[in-house]
Image 1: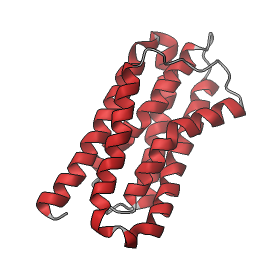
Image 2 (image 1 turned 180 degrees about the vertical axis):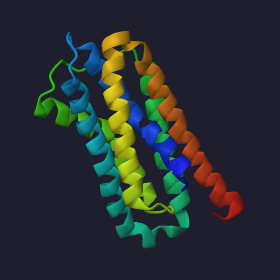
Image 3 (image 1 turned 180 degrees about the horizontal axis):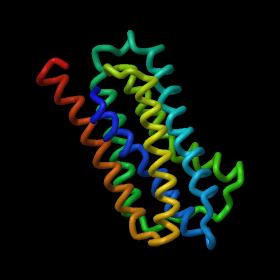
Image 4 (image 1 turned 90 degrees about the vertical axis):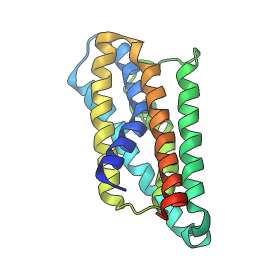
Length: 187
């Protein structure tokens, strides 16, 4: 997987955290740098940790499923992407409360990084150098989350569903690319 593909994947994965960060920005009457930093650290940290855990799990089972690994990668990315697209059309989405406390942020960080765990499983079947990949995912999510808090505080919730929709399309596109490369180009 090239650096450009990893960056696009990182951006796609960061869209859930970006959308939640926009909501966090909406909930803050007076924005301070610590709000942006808090979202960046929690969301970026968990977006880096979860694919590493997924990769470790995938490595354990890699030898058993080598013949279908491209299908697993495609299905996982397509399901995650489709779910993100579906959620982008949901009118029931609620913004989290204004709390930046440990319990609230931990819950949000885990919730927004579950898809990164599944992507980490696919990394075990692809040619991915895991440490640079998770660092790039974490740094990208950190930046998107910190910026998302500011955007939410300034512009409101206009970008939330668009970000989630775009992230879903990106993940589905990467899944299709993996499948097409394997089926038609032997990659």
